[in-house]
Length: 152
Image (cartoon, rainbow, N blue to C red; front, top):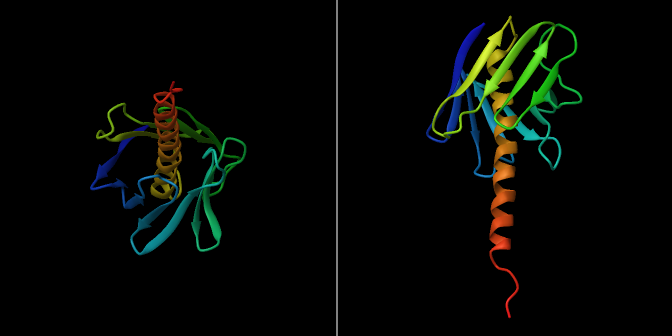
């Protein structure tokens, strides 16, 4: 097992040769690896699944019910959680742990050989962070609305 880290620098996330840049709301992102560029976005309004596209074809799809990553092998399983997630395939595993403090790096434990590891990991980071952002925005909206109860 290898332990690696996704670093946050100047509003972007970096893992190996991959860089992820997003907007403030995390509705869409752009992944760059060298000269290649992918678009990553949630597949549903609840942001449970995400897909990374190169042009019109999906390169990576992460969803608890159906996932796809590059390379040979059996079915892929994606299990997102509140502070992390896990991707498994044929005894290989990628486990991500998001720190409680936003400025700290995301921990990535990798077991086995994964084709396009940089693209898969940075897509998984987007999948976890977009859900966290949506959760934060919903909580903020509820708190703001609840603080202005009936007048009179």
